Image (tube, rainbow, N blue to C red):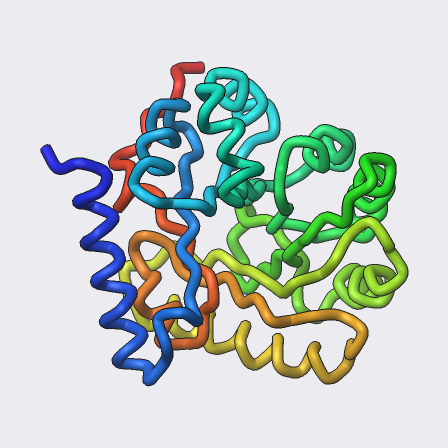
Length: 243
């Protein structure tokens, strides 16, 4: 049974190799360890191995998990710059709690959520980094704003005036498909869209391009991703609680 540190080293090698193939610097790609559904102990092991950026899927789950973290890790979050981002869908009625718990929210897909997050962040005296989630597949289970929707246009236009949030870029989850070229086409499309939005909305930042997970992060890097979200390849198979 490999240790987390050993699995991390393998992932780091694969990221570096993908960067070399794409003619990019390794420093251009950040690794997010997706710790959702895994216990606090797994997160602590990752911190000990040097991980500083994490992704969690649910507000309530991370709230419980955070209470279980050791005092040393909680203190290290401030001292060592440990970040935990929400990467699951956020309901508008949980924005206040999300603003308090997370270092960033990477799945904003509506004006309502953006406005409520901004209000909550301002009440806390912080400016919360966000990514806008873009839906590029027709899958009903997928969340995100459609690239040609009025909702997305209004979100980009409104975000520039919301002082409690800071748009850092966009993210997407590709369609479920065994063909790697499906993910590549999706990532290539988002990169092209992002470049257009950067021209259309110059008051917003589109530096972050979050694409790629355990099964396709190398393709994401080859297509320009600046942030890859790795869960299963680092933490192992997820164990979902029985309903």
